[in-house]
Image 1: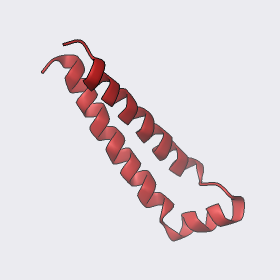
Image 2: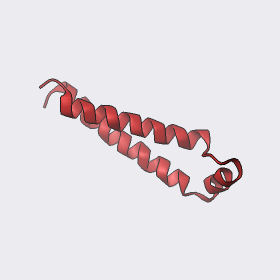
Image 3: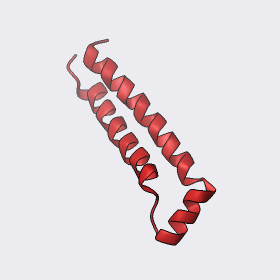
Amino acid sequence: MGTTKAIGLVLLVLGGVLLYFGYQSTESLSEQLVEGLTGRYSDATMQYLIGGAAAAAVGLMLLLFGKR
């Protein structure tokens, strides 16, 4: 496995972990209260979700299209 593919795998796993924590955060009582009052999630939750999605997407692209 090349360095590019290894980095892609690490980013994919890291993205999955961040998405998991972001999802868990959206299910908390305090986050649901904030979302109910303001209509959006807190900044920290959005950072987890956006960061996780970006890391997973870049990791997947590196795994699929990285140099062999």
